[in-house]
Length: 82
Image (cartoon, rainbow, N blue to C red):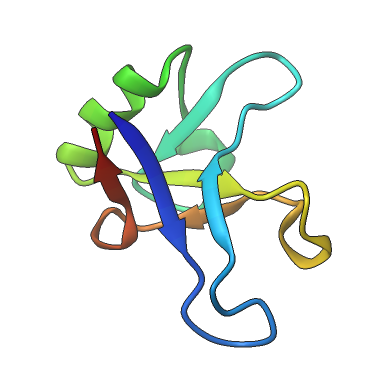
């Protein structure tokens, strides 16, 4: 499964976001926006399990200036495709 999200408003509307892999190699899932609540996972497959349980995930698009930094995207906005 591939995880994506599409920015719906603002100057970046239409930008496709994908899970953000941090420098340490991990993806992040979290129930809150606070780092103390982050769950670190190694694969997008693990990330999908957290999305299904209601966790938000950090996503970005490094090719777009205003979305290089990761944003926490709620599960209802995450699109899964085979």
